[in-house]
Amino acid sequence: MSRRGGPLRGAITVPGDKSISHRALMLAALAEGTSRISGFLEGEDTRATAAVLAQLGVIIETPAPGERCVHGVGLHGLRGPSRPLDCGNAGTGMRLLAGLLAGQAFDATLVGDESLSRRPMRRVTEPLVWMGARIDTSEGLPPLLIRGGRRLRGIRYESPVASAQVKSALLLAGLYAEGETEILEPHPTRDYTERMLSAFGWPIRFGPGQASLTGGHVLQATDVQVPADFSSAAFFLVAASLVPGSELRLRGVGLNPRRTGLLLALKLMGADIEVLDERSSGGETVADLCVRHAPLHGIELPPALVPDMIDEFPALFIAAAAAQGTTVIRGAAELRVKESDRIASMAAGLRGLGVQVAETPDGAVITGGPLGAGTVQGHGDHRVAMSFAVAGLVATGSGVHIEDCRNVGTSFPGFMELANGCGFALAGA
Ligand SMILES: O=C(O)C1=C[C@@H](OP(=O)(O)O)[C@@H](O)[C@H](O)C1
Ligand SMILES: C=C(OP(=O)(O)O)C(=O)O
Image (tube, rainbow, N blue to C red; front, side, top):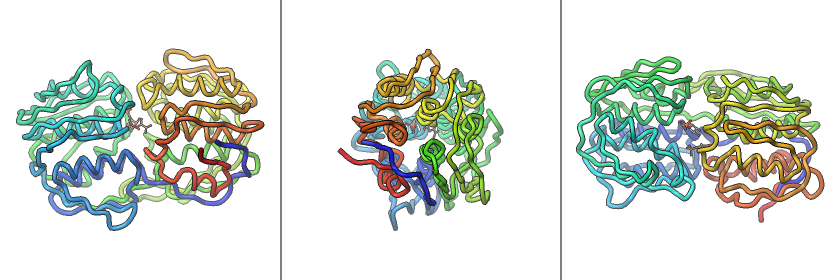
């Protein structure tokens, strides 16, 4: 249940970046030597990836919360698992591991929860098969049975979908392939895999929308400092923009340009967000973000921003609903194949709060106005649930009751405590 609270004030640090945490574990596992990861996201998704790697014989210690010490086994040191490997709710975990496992000597099966079991995997299995992998699926959905002992060869792949998960899966398979693996994207996506491969000493060429590497090198252990996750910061950027009197500082947020589309979108809507103390940490730009309340107005979202804010749409839907005027979102059909169909989930929830939303196949038209009280479905989707927690801050009357919101810990453990600590009024069931 989320109700109107006080203005949002203070300085907070949201948990570590999910994308970087998954990748750090995987590359550290395949490296020679011991890598230390700090700022690691203690979320269910990234812990599932750690558990999968442990099942493959990698020793991963937890010296303290948010820290991991990974004893790398080298590129060919993983051990075949005796049971299916459970990726939980994590699309990133399953798709990247599919690439990593395609080049192993053993068979492995990747499984996931109910939501992950509905998500499309053909986008990775098809190009992996072109590289020589053998993967059995039913209708392109999990589980994925990945056969070992295959000889992979590099391919040049023009991906039809702007997806860092597809790109990363192929790059990980490319570590095991003969010759060059090259991926071209229709729109540049987050380049964490490329940057991290380079930090682990693997030669790689990459630029916006393109990455290539050859097999036959070695990953050398290194330490990884994970910045705070922009996608988790996003809920607070919207919340503090909406609640009068708010002034909130978000510390050490990762500002990879392929992640910060929401910052630009909110600024176009009139938000007051200052980027302070910009610095470099572990090869990524991080900064503090200071957000103050400001009246927001609707916009036509530039479609070019879509891939740079793909996980922030649920939060944007709330900003648009509380803004003055109409917001038009196009070119975001990918939202339909996330943890839930995020266009449908957000539209249905907002309509339940009295907001006018017209769904389109690849977006929505949202007419801003007052938000009423009501019950909404979280659809077991962490970002949908947290977005409606933000909606509760500006809803009238008894606030917003959110059902099916148990897995917020997928990406944001401790959300409720952190949010209540800076002015939210969230209560558990
Ligand atoms: O590579 C990654 O870490 C991610 C890529 C994006 O997915 P797609 O590759 O499907 O766009 C994003 O939605 C997901 O949360 C994390
Ligand atoms: C889509 C997301 O993650 P994943 O694809 O890893 O499940 C997300 O965190 O919003």
